[in-house]
Amino acid sequence: MHKHPSSSVQQAREALAARLLDIRLDAGITKRELSSRCGWHESKSSRIENARTPPSDADIRAWCAACNAEDRAPDLIATNRQSTEMHIEWRRLQRTGLRQLQESGVSLYERTRTFRVYTSDVIPGFLQTPGYATALLTSIASFRGTPNDVRQAVIARMRRNGVVREGNHRLALVIEESVLRHRICDVDTMAGQLGQLLSSMSLPSVSLGIIPLSAERTVWPMATFTVFDDERVHADSLDAASTLTQPSQVGLYLHAFETLAQNAVYGAPARALITGALASLDG
Image 1 (tube, rainbow, N blue to C red):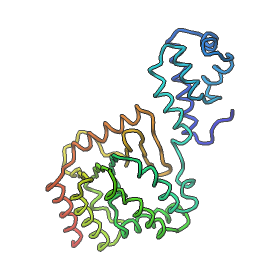
Image 2 (cartoon, rainbow, N blue to C red; image 1 turned 180 degrees about the horizontal axis):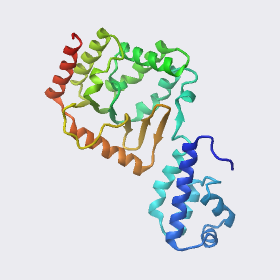
Image 3 (cartoon, rainbow, N blue to C red; image 1 turned 120 degrees about the vertical axis):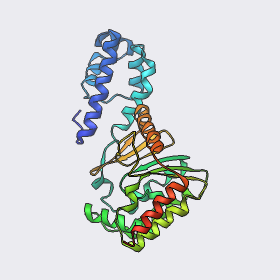
Image 4 (cartoon, one colour; image 1 turned 90 degrees about the horizontal axis):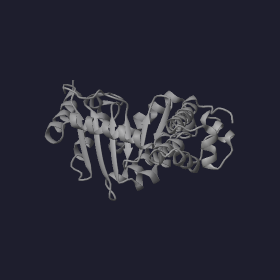
């Protein structure tokens, strides 16, 4: 089997193969013995250990059972499933424009009950006004050179964001104070966006925390991410969107969110930071 064209995906496959190799070595058995216990040819074990053949879920379960390491199987299976989707370049996701990307997430948003969102760059999409979303998506379309369907994409985003006010959903959001002051749109639009944040704080489904610039932190600012129901993480970088489902990875992001949330202020102190940013727009 040829290497995957994405180096990140290939690295993930190789990392999985290395973990399976370690499990076999820890069990103190040869590839021949493992193959005999699994009921397949020895060459298959070699192909898996050398990342030439990605194992199936059943292969991983059999491998772990043969090595008396059944407890390792769930994490490895999640790693295997995400390897082909964990790193998708934005130019591939957005090659037909931004509207389709917004619509593609609707089913995930509808079935998710608890969202945990941390942002260090822009206002979370859930709480964006149409004006702010238009400015942001216009900037993204221009930067990436994608088809300009911003108007339709904004409509799709606003429709998707209906989960904030509809259904049994809970949103826990933590943002950096600097996000309140990033000028990615004109003054009037930013004022409207900050006003939207203030009104959103009164929604029973929303918890909004803000980490002050002056806070003595226990964890550093990091890249924006969203956790869906403790099962899935979307972590974005400049060139790609990563989807993480491995339990240990999801657990790491949950720990990061909890720590960031402890550095944030809520209620009246958070409102004061937003009104302070509003007042600075007149300067």
